Structures are given as structure tokens and as C-alpha cells.
Image (cartoon, rainbow over the protein chains, first blue to last red):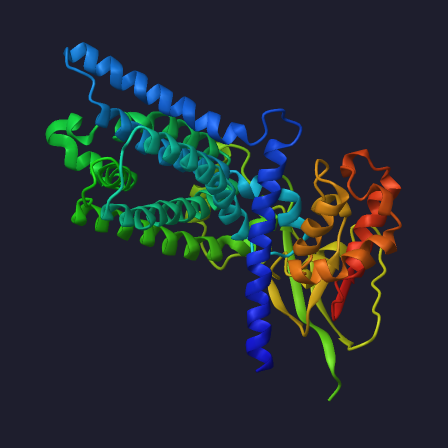
Length: 264
Length: 181
């Protein structure tokens, strides 16, 4: 009885720690800024804007009419993409940024990358709310397929957390990891069907979908804009990879953790 | 049998001088040298030294235990081993009960957050739940004597106020084992 109580207590403490660290990051980000939380909407809007510009450009070049559904799909894929990019960047640097805490207090250290992803998720929620309003006003409509949204979003979060744990531990030992992540992420947008449909890749479409983010983004566009179920096989693949990343990231993280304070 | 809150048995901790690997130019030769070496590995590799060697002691519940030594004697290393921040190279550390370590306040506080926000942040870092902090919040603030400034960002605090608030939070964690460096 006492034991189970103390176990519950320690889970409570762990959850509170993640929440407080995420909340700290959110607070600091918007402190002393006039726009405050509006930045959470503005930043993804810029990404969506860039995507729409690309889409317009492509249609104009091909001499076709701009398809409103394509534009909506770009917007629906850009917002989670922005979340993925920001979480990965932020989580990778999370242990280094909290170096004083890593070397001075004992905490279960996985809270740092997890809190980093959570704080970005808050921004994602704000941006999604704005997107939902826009989609609602433009008459995008709703359907039973929307029930897929939480499944796909949870897959995306799991992917961020798994990669974040792995990369944050890597960056702690070798700072190169941080720069590599920056470079890879900058170029990844060209190899991920964010700004254009996956069909653009032609016979390499299947290769493009091997990137586990791609099926999740394409799935979200299918579900929200086209009101149809996502491709089941690819969705299962992406969620499988996300789960494997989570498990693998956690195991590696735990194994390296005893060295963190000495090697940071 | 005595009731020990802290037990340390044959603890050793090894550190290394200098940078780990300055560059790729140093890393490759050292890997080759390591691969070619014959015979058993020496206990201490080049540049390594013992910060602590074969330390054993036990502290009974309710007792205070002090460690005195010159600069560089290994007091802080021992502290970090007890707190679980570092893992001993050899030996074992056993702590029975909720442990809290008094650390530099600056490690847990964020300058841009207000005193109130930092009480919650620092409290959770030291191992309290938010519920516990909420319950004891008024006590913590009263103990620090900073009621008027609790909603001011701590970057505007004097260093004395900063330390008072930090200590006040740490004093309310109610640990069974308290470490002070």
C-alpha cells in the first residue's frame, strides 16, 4: 500500500516536472514581447504562406488553375511540419541548454527533451486552432474521417519524442549533432511532401514515404481536406517507426544517462 | 542493526584531466594505440586520476554528518555521487528515503520569471509536486520575507533576495536526507 502510494507520488512528481519545464519554456519565449502568444500563430502562418507561394508558383508554371483543395492541403501539412521541425531543434539542444540542472541536481533527465516537445506542442495547438477557424470559414467541412486526426498527431508526437531523446543525448556528447540536425532539417523540406503532394515524386513516391513524417502529413491532408481515410499500410508503417523510435530513444537515453553530468 | 539513512561502501571515482578528445587528429591515434596495446589495461589510463578512492561510511537516521577537506579533496564529487548526479566507478551508494540536495539557487531559477513562478519551478526541480507547493506557498513566501516582491521578475532582485527565496523553497521540501554542499 505504502509502496504503491510512493510510486504514484513519484509519477506525479515526474509529470509535474515535465509540465513545469514546458511551461517555463513557453513563458520565457513570450516574455517581454509585445505580440506575446500571437507569435505562435504568426510563425506557422509564415511557413503556410511559403507553402502557398510554392503551390501558386507550381500551378502557374504548369498553366493549371489553382486547386483550392491543394492549397488547403498545403496549409494542413505545413502546421504539423513546423511543429516537427521546431520540436526536433528544441529537443536536440534541451540537455545542453539545461546544463546547470543536469550537473547540479538529480532529475530523471528524459524530462528535458520531453518537456521541449511539449512546449512546442502548445504552439502547435494554438496554430491548429487558428487553422481550424480558417478551414471552417472557407467551408472545408467535417466528416467521420476526422477521427484519424488524434491518431496521426500522436504518431507525430511519438516520433518527435523518440528522435528528441536520441538526438539530445547525442548532442550532449558531440555538439556536431546540433549542427547536423539544423542542416538536415533545412533540406528535409525538399524531400518531404509538405509544400506539394507526394505524387510529385512520381515513381519515387514510395521512397519519399519511407520518411516516417511523410505518411503522417499526407494522412492529415487526406483526412482533413479530402475527408477520406489515410493509406492504412503507410500509416501503420509511420506509427510503427514512431513507436520504435520512442522505445529505442528511451533505451539509449537511459543507458547513456550516467555519463551525462561528466561529459556535458 | 542500526537504521542507516545513508550507506557508502568502497566508493571510487575516476576523472580525467584535460579535454576528452581535442580533435579528430588526436582521436584517431589514440584509438589505434588502444587497439594495439597488449596485456591487461592499467587501472588508471594516461591523464586519469582518482578523485575518490575506497570511501566508506554510514550515517544513521536523524544524525548530521560533515565532511571537511582542502580544496580539491573530493567533497563535491562525494556530494554528486550521493545525489545520484554521478555514478561511482566502483562501490555502492545507498540512500533510504526522500533525498534533497541544496544547490546553488541560480541553477534552478529563471531570471525572467517572477518570484511566484520561480517558487513553483524550483520546488518541482527539488522534488515537490505542484500540489505540495500550492499548499505551502504562503509559508515559503513568509519565510523569505519577500511578500511585496513575489510578482516581480527575479532578475530585478538583489542577490540577497535571490538567495533568500531559493533557500526558503529548499527549506520546505521536507526531505528525509538533506545534502548541503
